View 1 (tube, helix red, strand yellow):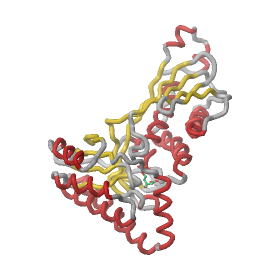
View 2 (cartoon, protein in one colour; view 1 turned 120 degrees about the vertical axis):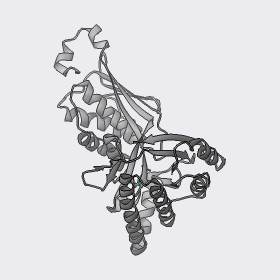
View 3 (cartoon, protein in one colour; view 1 turned 90 degrees about the vertical axis):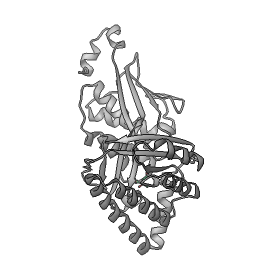
View 4 (cartoon, helix red, strand yellow; view 1 turned 60 degrees about the horizontal axis):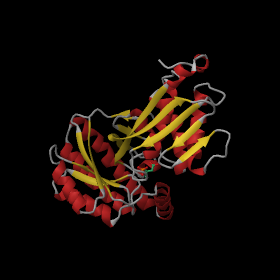
Length: 328
Ligand code: PMV
């Protein structure tokens, strides 16, 4: 069990240097319902354990320091906050507040991540989750998934404006979830593991902008967009049932239908369409774009053992990198 601040202050420098806590969080991929989820429809997302964010928390000599390795930024409390890490600094403060720590403690927080940025894999939410978990563990508080998720949502709002909250929820719970904005998430018990291939288009997906484009379209033609969202809601609820009963062929078909509705929303791209086609051509049960779209990833549900064939076909269609993951 980690020590409290008062106990920490009594430690000798040798004892202090041993106090290192690592907070970890995995990535995520949305299988159904992106965009529609912003309009109060359900969505399904699963954790991706092959990629990870990490927050290393060490007792420091003097002030609280945050080091974001990927961004090459080191920030000391009391100095001006670089714009890129404003949400993380605010998150550290909100977490310390939640842990009833009133003055910034002498800690060094180092962030590292193997999750590609802006590809719909939840890199921002995962880094934030690692920070919250790491600080909680370091001070001996066991924060619930719900508490972690709520803290991370604050940082997500900073990055994305008005996110639905699906990223912070699936990453904090680290389980397949059926999610409706503002409601308690429902964990899906999978009858069969899902073998997934995630193909990176190599193009950044600017979530905030794509969500805004959909909003503009919705404002112009509400009837059409609401009809599409209703269609997505219907297939998302069918997909949940198919996952619970283990009908993976059906889950795959529904992914294909979801992709077509995302095409109608205007958030696909020729490359994403080709990746979906390539996965289907190599025998995947289904494939679709995942996340905000325009760039980012396509995700395919594949037959166990077919990962090499599908990966090859996706690479041939222009995928820049491939992640294979099994969700159970
Ligand atoms: O691009 P991602 O994976 O961060 O997903 C965005 C999902 C949206 O439904 C488009 C937006 C949201 O807030 O849920």
